Amino acid sequence: MLKTVPRYRHVISLGYFCSTALELKRYGLRDHSYPFDWNISPIRSALAMVESGFDGFLQLDRLSPEAGYVRDTGTDILVYNEFDPARSIGEQYEAVREKYERRIARFRRAISEPTLFVRYIDSEGRSLEEFTYLDENMAAVLAVLRRTNPLNDLLLVGDDALPATCGGLRVYRVASDEADVVARKFLQKNPELRRNLVGLDYPLGVRAGNLLRYWFGRSFGRVRRYVSLRTRLRDFATIGTEDDPQGSRR
View 1 (tube, rainbow, N blue to C red):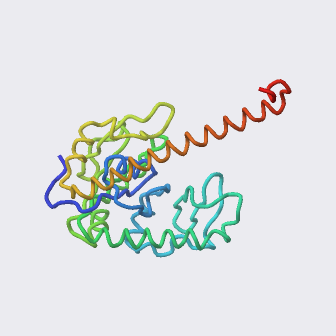
View 2: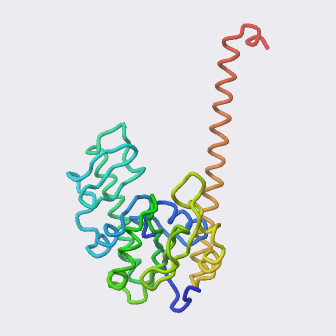
View 3: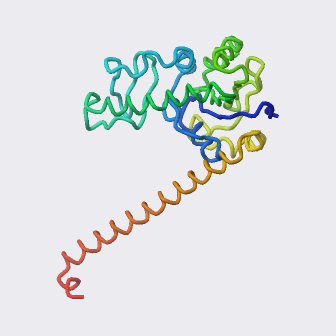
């Protein structure tokens, strides 16, 4: 069982991919956008950014466009969904940089209060590289995460082929989705982990607000998709009648 004292003021994704943040969001545990939420972040890169205060992250001369993302070659973090591939990185850079400056400032403020970091262990291709690094260096890893608050803690999620503990910490194991290397909705696959996270001593008002924003966003997204579908169907029907002399008279 996760400890409930002290109360965690924040639960924050430490990567390695976007589903970690998405799962926290679905259960009302994600207060804001933070730097690791939507990127692919190797564990050493993530820890180096936490330790340095994101020194050197997103420098323009180190950003390299690749298929579907932009690689920060200085940190080896893959930045997704921020840069439009149809435009140059340079013309978009300031807006993206300012967005991440806000996320980084928010992250740094948050982790000065009791924070639970959640990390999904990267074991793509059944690799044990990240697991081994964490297992052998857990004391140093926790020291980095606790520099800003000694009550900060780390929760590990990983593939069900991984060992049950890593550096003395439990690994909440889940089966990867079919034809995938990860479990996208891992809380559904590990009821114990879901119960423990839902049962955290976490500010109730904050969680309620987070859930309201999440469900409102989902509902608004469904409305937008419905309106878009109706528009496309109407356009299709209009094209059909324009091409059909009989249809145009009905």
